[in-house]
Amino acid sequence: MLYEVLRDRIRATEPTVFATVIDGPGVGGRLLLWPGGEPLGTLGNAELDRIVARDSLGELEAGHTLVRHYGPNGETTPEDLANTPTLSVFIESFAPPPQMWIFGAVDFTAALSKVGKILGYRVTVCDAREVFATKRRFPAADEVKVTWPGPMFTESGGSLGPRDAVCILTHDAKFDVPAVQGALATKVGYIGVMGSRKTHAKRLERLADVGVTAPEDLARLMSPIGLDLGARTPEETAVAICAEIIALRTGRRPPSLRNSSGPIHS
Amino acid sequence: MKDILDDIDRWRAAGKRVAVARVVNIEGSGPRDPGAAMAVSEDGEVAGSVSGGCVEGAVVGEALGILNGDGTPRLVRFGYSDDEAFAVGLTCGGIIHLFIEPMVW
Image (tube, rainbow over all chains, first blue to last red; front, side, top):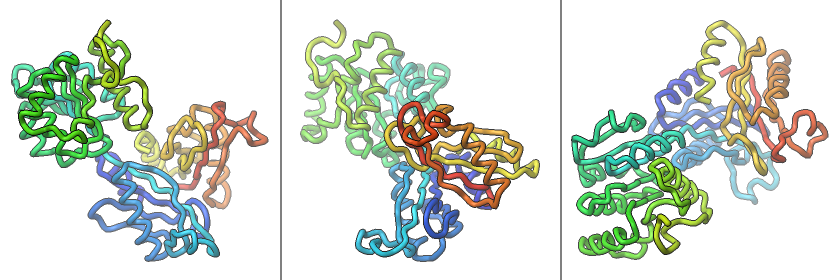
């Protein structure tokens, strides 16, 4: 029964978290839960279930899978755990795939949507031009939306979080500016904007015109987009962008184009 | 877990007992992250993986041991520092913790 529910939710990519006691008293106890649902199963007692459920939902939100330690009644502080048998609980998150939104239906977009898919993203391509924004041009994308950035962010911007990425590849101020504004209003973890250093400088002026000047906002923009790999083709550029997304998430500091000077292509 | 669901369904539909092994923790470098899972049927059929091929053979043995024994779940550790390192250790030098249990749920 527990397996069938878990299986169906995994297949439907519905956010779910599964807690199992793997060590200590009550090994094999299980709790299956999801946001807004009634938990299934038990780890042994109601208080432990309540504490682990609270922690598990937090881990699910962050997309983490890990082991946490508790006392028999859910105690977590070192003092409370000093003289009591502890149990280890494996908390396994089944989170929906992270999202990558790509603005601009250009050649780079086709390559980036492919690499994004390889890395496990749910890829959405967005462009206001109906002729270019077609599923046929971007077969790898999960969704192709013919719309402007404004409505797109108003509609679904709230679903973006630290695991997600927004890549703005349009090179067109009337599309770039609202896309950057929209992205900055979300909790998205990565915002990359394509263009030469000259384009970037002009874009900053346009952003200032609409009131985007806060240093903490501008610091979120990875622009020019990508790591300094000397990438030329759309495919190589896609790798440079995705590598930068990974590095930002892991906190490593390989050379980003943003942090160097001189021409991007030499 | 997703990649082993079809096999688990097939085995269970055929009335076979199944054990599942999940990576619960990694120390140092490990080839698969926590959550990587492998299922073993009572006939010794295998789905999924928990490492880069280093410990799967030993996991099948543990899983069958559980299915043919008293069914108690086991927390198993494989690592380079083990005496058996040359037999079933990880070539990358990491330590992998697996929880292996019969699927009675």
